[in-house]
Length: 259
Figure 1: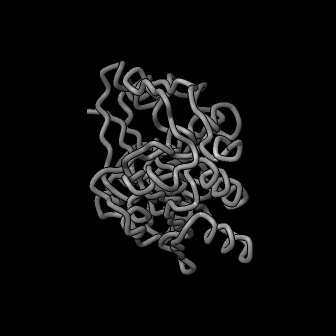
Figure 2 (figure 1 turned 120 degrees about the vertical axis):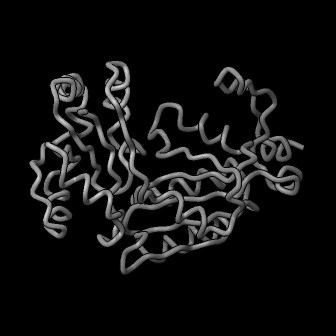
Figure 3 (figure 1 turned 180 degrees about the vertical axis):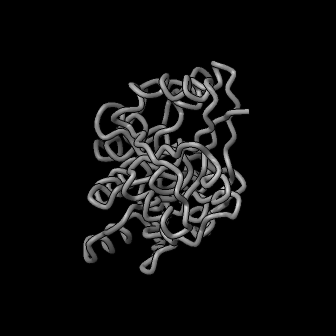
């Protein structure tokens, strides 16, 4: 029976792919790739000759229904991203939803994703965590940051090298200087690095050494200690049950400054 496979691919080291993933990519009728040039490098290494077509953020709205129709007509299709698991901060969600709405079987293989190694490497509690992906660039960014300041689970974010210093400064502003953080970059590659410390220490590190590669930021959860001493913003009222954060916040630092 035709179906959609979501196949995770290596996030850096090309050896980090499962036997089953290679088998599926060899057997399907078509591979949908975020960047066909990047995917063909992996396919060539594992002697996979399956036909490759593009499916990315700029054409997914236009192509999703067409692809679902092709699967209904009998094709078995695999979706991959440039690195990691499809639909995790990459295209995939729209196609999965369309397939499920049409009764098409969907199967996601287990495999690489950057957030789990970064979480484990951070040294912060990993029994409970929240993954935020990339923060909004403009609209809603401040509100999201303030909401995260009250998060009692370990926080995981993705960030680009040219925005990492700005993001660390904003996190320090809303969470205070006492919160610990970990930044992992170039995971599974030759120059893999994980830097741990306060926001100020990480800002100093990436100011003196130009950041390179995609970043995973892991932030210590709010604790009893940070609540009392270091949280820069205190939420007065938040309605998380309805998925919205009421904008009744005040800055403790500003309040102290007026005294």
